[in-house]
Image (cartoon, rainbow, N blue to C red; front, side):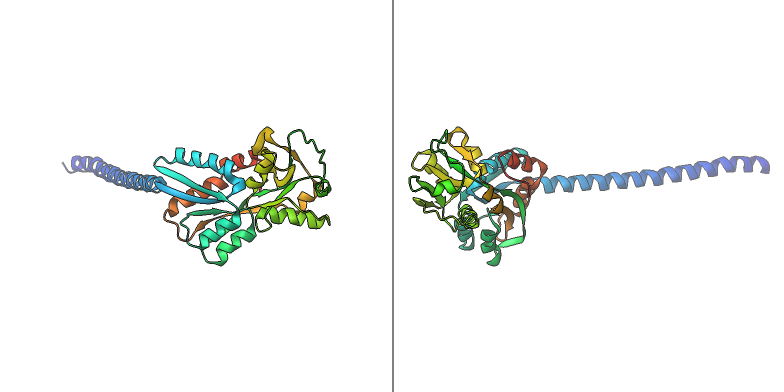
Length: 273
C-alpha cells in the first residue's frame, strides 16, 4: 500500500509542477502580448497626425517642398501642409512679427538667425541642403554670356536679388571675390521674381540658384561660373516656438531630412548638406 502510494505521488508531483510552469509561461506570454499590444497601440497613436502644418520657406524651395507637402499629406491622411514662400528675410520678419507658422526653412543661416536671435525657434536649426548660384539667360543664350564678368557689359539688362535676400547676398559675395562691379536694372525681393524677369524677356540675364534654372526648364538657359563655388548657401530648417501643431511640424522636418526627402531635393538640383 505504502509503495503504491509513493509511486502514485511522484507523477502527481511532476504533473503539478508542469501545470505550475505552464501557468507561469501563460501569464508571462499574456503579459508580453499585453505589453506589445499596448506599445503598438501607443506607437500607432503617436503616428496619427492631423490638422494643418504651416511652413514658411525660401522661394527657391517652392517646387521641391510642394512635392514633399503632397507626399506628407498622402502619408498622413487628415493633415494639410500650408506653404508661404518668399524671400527668407521677409519671412523671418513675419515670424518675429507674430505671423502664425510651425516650420521655417531659410536659404541662409544669416536669415535664420533673425528668428533664433528673437527666441522664436524651438530647438537648434539643422542644415538640410545647400544651393549654388548660376546665371540664367534667355533661351539659346543669344548674348553669348559665358562668365560673371560678361554681366558687367553695359549693353546687358541684368537682374539681381536684393542684397538682403540670401541669393542677392551670395551674388554680391561672388562679385566681390571677382572684384567685379555690376549695376543691375533692378533688385528683386526673391529669387523667383528675379528669374521671372528673364522668363518674360524683361531682362537678358539674372543671377539665381541652379535649382531655379532647373525648375524653369526650357524657359531659360543656365550658365555656370566658377566664382559660385565661393558663395554656396546652407539652408537651415527649424520648428518654431509658437507652433500650434508640434507633432506635424516635427514629422514634416523629419520628411525633409529623410532619404526620401533628400532624393526630391537633390533631383531638384540642391546639394547635399
